[in-house]
Length: 205
Length: 381
Ligand SMILES: [Cu+2]
Image (cartoon, rainbow over all chains, first blue to last red; front, top):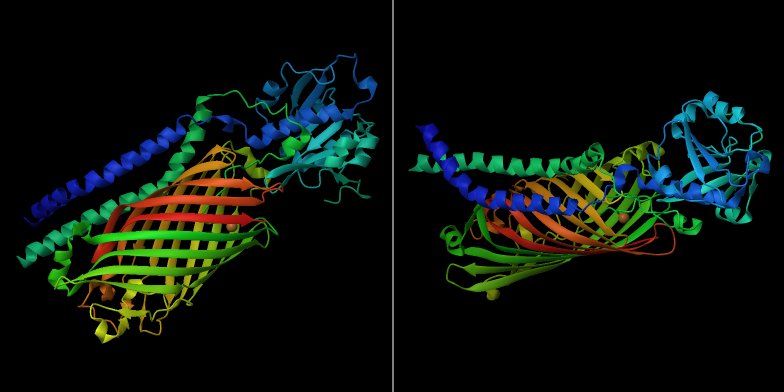
């Protein structure tokens, strides 16, 4: 008897409560869903990499490769990525159909440095942090613009390193490494960069 | 008859608990629910044309924010960053409640000589924040509070009491123990970086607990005002908390739990009840300068321990230490406006927020919140 009374009491009170609480909850969820509905799915590739891809595209305008690295005047710039690709489809969709100084761009992806073919730019993914020294040693003497996004990348001999300053993207340029690779970097690009020099002894990490 | 009353109260209690905890669970699960959206769309493979950034110059690219939805409430600053903030809060309480039921002034006057009818609280708060490192942010906040409460007496007379002055000074340290907006390891997820913050706050009793004013009969002189009209807790209060923050390009979301506990008794022989607070919000970027947010707050406030000997708990419910506790869930919506300066991440932010109660269960009779307004300005430099 006690139980039935309790249940009845719960029911009668709950109906009153429910009306207010549940309706406000439904309203709340509806508002959220409406807000979400027109949401763009740009999140597929983080905004950071959309911006970094645009940076890379822009770098090409300010860097001169030795003529022998291109078979012809209209040969494309070959952008290679080693390791886990953070760009997703952004590079293809961004570079597709565009030319920079009369050249198109081709994107190639590699798992291991041994498989690397002919490239003009090599983006070294953060997944390769552990083997950075081997990669940079293997590339010595090549006219290759190396781009990374990890601590001490430029100091270790990489050419351009992306850094995050507060919530914005900045980059470092190792001018010694660029000179060794035979790349000419415009003063305009250097003026926007933090200039880094080769540390006397690499591989201290 | 007595047992029936008990049974009804008991059964009501179960229902209230269930409703309250359901609200609490929803408020907690909300961020997870929201996280599902970017995840779901990724899985569905829905793609939208990327905004073409290749037309931008290097300088323009350098001006783009990677994480463009700013965060409100508990947040951190980067190393060497300073923030100066001002916040104005207005809260209106109207009518009494016992449990979840609204009750009339006449109901209150059956048991008390005086019934509070409504109350307004205004707070001006200034705060300074500083990033000691990217992982540790310190904050100092001092409120200035103005309270006003209207009453009705058994004889039908009406009177108002007022109190005004500085509240309790609050110091806090926020430590990021998981995640870092700068660290690349967290850029790999399509829905942005996740962070966990540990927060420890200390409240210094700078607010008065001896506010007095004239009551119904001014010839009796100024009398000690009841608990909700006092400006401080009178005790050192410790408030440890934990915050989860998530961010994507267009969204930011947060869930937080904070416990405020009072250290010892104050000079008037009581301590305010502990406060258990959870909240979550979801913010959606509309433009680079504007974002909207929706917020849910859940609170459990315990009753006062001890009693101020200058107060008579049978006179008015606000003077009864056993009628201060309660549970509530509030919903608010707001807008964030950014006025960025030239320099990185520096600039002004304005927040306007309006809130109303979704659910209240009070150890009453007790005044319940009707609505609140929050206007804040923050300058980061
Ligand atoms: Cu701040």
